[in-house]
Image (cartoon, rainbow, N blue to C red; front, side, top):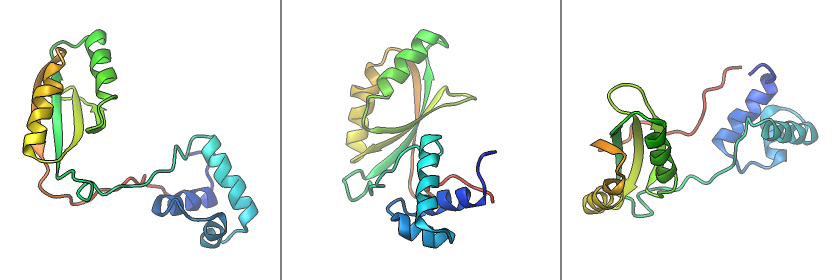
Length: 155
């Protein structure tokens, strides 16, 4: 954060709210002219502060009726098992997030499925085929209290 000034942070905040803002709209929100805002935004992209721009899609409207947090324990704590697990998980569309964690489990997956039958088929047919998994613990989300992609930024 050393190379970020107050204006950079304001730009990042506004883009986290709405990444479709035009340079002119963004400039008005941060009280700067469009040209320097454009240059700052390009620098923030180049330096990796802005990783990408995405559309946030509603999972319910696209038929993904349930969200599951699935805790995974590997059979063995080895580089081989970890690499095998992460390379396969990275390719599975239903898994939208994967975290390597401390504690009782090695990984936590965020998974979307159409319904309980779909999730059961996923566990038995996809995760069940991974011989590096020792055990799973599924937590079914019954409601979201907060879901944001925004990163906290202090001025």
